[in-house]
Length: 92
Image 1 (cartoon, rainbow, N blue to C red):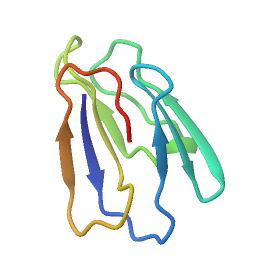
Image 2 (tube, helix red, strand yellow; image 1 turned 90 degrees about the vertical axis):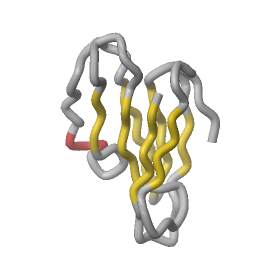
Image 3 (tube, one colour; image 1 turned 30 degrees about the horizontal axis):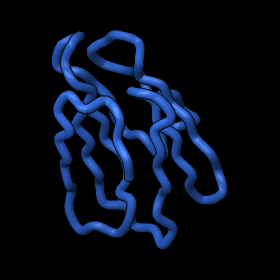
Image 4 (cartoon, rainbow, N blue to C red; image 1 turned 180 degrees about the vertical axis):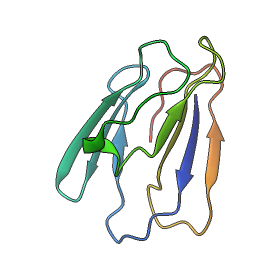
C-alpha cells in the first residue's frame, strides 16, 4: 500500500485507523468517515461524502498495491509518500 499525505492547512489533524485491509476510517472535525477500497479495480471513484479526507485512490494493476492520497495527519509543507509495499495493515 502506498499512502501520500498531502499538506493540510488545519489546526485539527485527522485521526486515521484501518479496521481491515484496504479500508480506512478517519475522524476529522467531529465527523467520522469510512471508505472501502477492497473491491478489485484500477481507478476508484471517491464518494462525495469522503472527498474531503480521501482525495484519490487507484491501483496501477488490478493485483497491485493500493495507492491513496489523503490529507496529512499534521501540518506538512510538502507531500510525503510512504510505501508500505505488500503490507496490508497500517498503523498510525
